[in-house]
Amino acid sequence: MMKTKLQLGVVLLAALFAVGATAAEGGNPKKGKHLYKKECKVCHSKSDAAGEITPMSKTMAQWDRFFDKDKHGAKPEVFEKLSEQDIKDIQQFLYDHAVDSAQPQTCG
Image 1 (cartoon, rainbow, N blue to C red):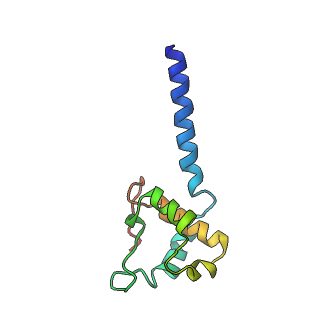
Image 2 (cartoon, rainbow, N blue to C red):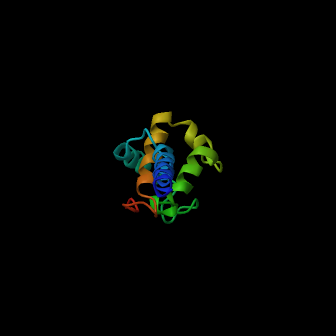
């Protein structure tokens, strides 16, 4: 009975880890940081009307939801000018440095 519970626990942990690991998969966070500074900070700096947004503005799950469902819903044309890989790179950077990540970052 104890062995079965342990096996079930290992399977559940592996499944949870796999779901989290695939959420922002495929992006290059170094390129994403460069793209974020070039494309996003133009409108999302401290004194801009769109409001300041940094990687620490959201949790990892909230960033994934933003990229998977919202897709910059307030101004979707912003994403339309970026390649799919550019968006993945930015997502990976924001996800890796979200407020609940191991390395939260503001991006200067």
